Length: 371
Image 1: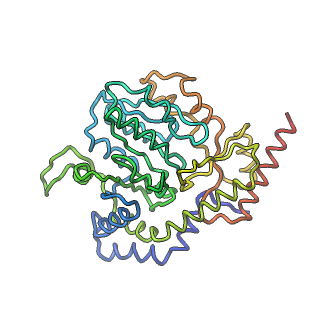
Image 2: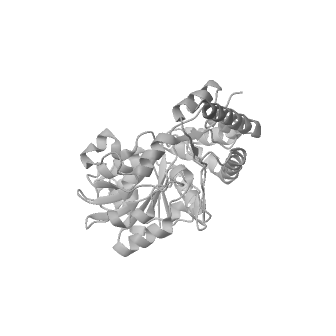
């Protein structure tokens, strides 16, 4: 039985006529940079999320960088974030010569623990950057209350969570600025790099639009130091073709996640989605002992898996200058040792999921019997 982790090829075949037509429309016009599809996609993303401004850009990483630049983050400013996430979250902070300040995660959601944020605030703190990890928003009500108390900004790294909700609002509409990624394997992905920035703040929106084209306010006139951060028109066309199917795909991902959870026993630590939130299930991530052995057993049965993330950011070589040590963020370090993500996509069938869970349970039982 062949099981694909993200199944991008099957998705393409299902939407092939629409995607091909969208791409060829761009090819026929040859308007590859900032073509009309960019404005059309931004309008549809704004409608989908309920945000006033949706600004597309070249990647999820650049989306975070644009947010920080729009807020005029300076060297020595501090941004509070999580050490259990992809490198780009803290990397963009460091790229601005600001200081990433890490706070440990919740053991059940893997998101930043809002109860620990206040203790990390100093007079240099300028913003909080929670990550909606694996598809589910962090505790935004608590985070927003802390931000308001200390006059801090909130930048949501929603690279993995486009379309998720918190108290009925999409996480693209929860921060002062929110970001997402359209990397191919994301729940809504293009066929290369891509991202977007969302805000209800007119000033931020206008600044971000200029910064993504080198700070330009009119042809060959530059108001800000900027970057080449545009989304390619072809990628916008692909996303326009896929977006109408996205709500249905999210429903399908929810069904896949529910079937996993129904078939796996309580003895395995399963993902938790809080009652006031929804997840887009970017990953279905469980916790197991003997992770490396389990991964090899699943691989032997043609079941792909992935590990997000084997080394917490505070222990990465590039962040040694922050002087964090082993044991400072216990939950993050524990998660790095025992999480494993199972195949997750909208097109997994029940027989695939039963095969995955059967193989997993058989090998977990075998390892337990050998102890």
